[in-house]
Image (cartoon, rainbow, N blue to C red; front, side):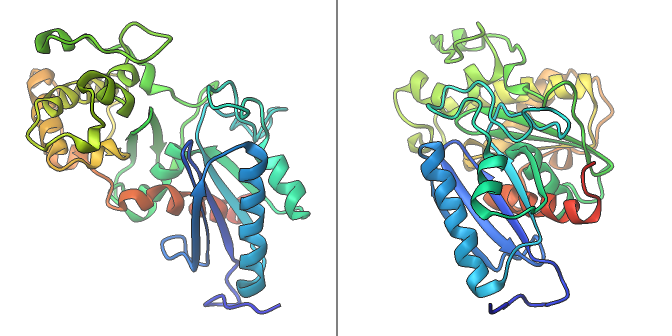
Amino acid sequence: MANNNTDPETPLLGGIEAGGTKIVCAIASEPSEPLFEESFPTTTPEETTGKIIEFFEKAAQTHGPVASLGIGTFGPADIHPRSPGYGSILTTPKKGWSHYSIVQSIRDGLGTGIPIAFDTDVNAAAVGEAEYGAGRNHRFIAYVTVGTGIGGGFLQDGQILKGRMHPEIGHIPVPDYDAAYGKSTNVCPFHDSCLEGRAAGPSLAARWDIPGQDLPDDHEAWDLEAKYLAAGCISLTASWSPDTIIIGGGVSSKYGLIDRIRAAFADLSGDYWALPPLEIYLQNPALGQKAGIVGSLCLAQRMLQKPEN
């Protein structure tokens, strides 16, 4: 079998960014420089897993087999290696995926004892930014992703922080700022006013009757969006006090939004905390939309350096 790895002595890494809408698969010798990458829609578990297995089988024909695999997945997910359900998606509205074990299905499909790291997509993105992006040279990193949902990941000295389960910062309470705009939009079915319900992509579309990506840069929607996201960042600052908060995801990439978030944060904070300049404290990911797949490859690399017990 041919191996076009740039360095035959370097183990080949596999990465999967398993989003609720799209799957990205990649192989690499160096996480920041994928050798081969492919994406496809997230459909049923069986069809999606089949395409993932096809990708790695096809990649092995040219580059050789991967030595380890890192998966950053949409959640909620069982990410604790000692849990009986490790590698599974937990209760999710995404049809067919509740309690589906991605790890076991991929392991069965590839037919190998390959070590697999399994974590959330936002934790993977946080690792990618810590290693190669905006989180370099910071000890305490918070990563917030704003897209179809809102999630968060935290790193301390490069290590992912976990409690009983992974953080669900999308569901922290936030004030109802909609009233000032003559609106009242919260799309979360579980909470009266939480960050995800007020500021995720679907709430933008429901509030303004148009998808966020189609709203003009100067639309008042972005001032309201910034205020909600700033309120979320205030909660992170008060509860943990990171060195930097990196705000990623499709919604966050809107031109000028990060500046609006900084301005709203300064207004809401009351000048209470001694913080770095807001251009450092609140920033977009340096890796952009690549943070998740680069981070997944980093997780694979970490499995070889220090396998889970």
